[in-house]
Length: 459
Image (tube, rainbow, N blue to C red; front, side, top):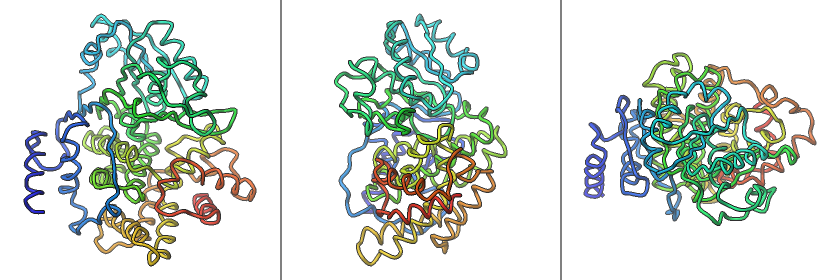
């Protein structure tokens, strides 16, 4: 074991050319190919410099077999957005579709002009909300009408998801409903998507490194995914400087989402050794820096930590799934139209953590998997509190305090129309959430009563 660890650390040091064994705060940036050895060595190394606990980490769930999916290339660092024009040129495109937010065309004009200067004509498609089915149809038509052979998504998670879906469907026949899960046919993609560069401007969803795009069907009142390994971005270009302008509330909501997406895969029954390291580092960075990013938005070190947490959470969820928080969020976001995904996750996280831990504690004598998942809740609690003797309940209390400090509203304030006193509505939401893809990663199957308790605690 000692020899293996030494060789791994040496290889990681050589490949990253980093001045330390951890991706430390202040590191100018890094570039990695996710299909090489670097991500493996990175995951085995991360967490060594986080400073939150010296206790030996819990083992991954009984030798789960795993594969690892990610963006073809991850480019990370302050100022790296300046490389976007040359990256676009490297794909040999004459026409590029740039998907961005409603203010994105003006905000990112210098990048669009620089892409034009490379001889690539930019065609823009803007989206000002979480993408709906018709938004994707319209975006696909714009790409086809202009002969676009490259798609760039520059914006928050909704923009990146929309761009990802447009790139996939621009090359595949039929309608979006042929490919969406749950409410559609869920057909696999036949053709590879258009080349796609993801440029996130918030730190939260991790969509820049995942293989699905979340879209909303107003008709069905559900958020669903188009999912395929073919949809992984060709390049994830992550520049923390692009997140500095995010307003405090958005920083809080997306930051809590990033933290959730590091915690849920870590306690998931599908966790594996590769995602474990990513989750530990992501949890440590988000716990240390989310408050600072919220109160001091120009603190680039805090923004960098949150950008790392977002990327690592995306890598983890793509390969170890999520849990109850995201199981609920898709249903609530679909039912209650203007409920922001990050705000929903933020409202639910402390309470899902608490209920999961309590149920696992009661069941830990039943199986090794339950005992391990409970231990992992304790480990998370010790990482986020900095207390080596913290209990799972201490972790839930810390998450509640964080949510208060960030001004996270209660669930009925986030989801207009949600009535916690409407027993039938609550039951329906719980039943629909039980069948969601994300709920499949939860470390224990929760009953309707236990799921209902989470909703009541969050309200």
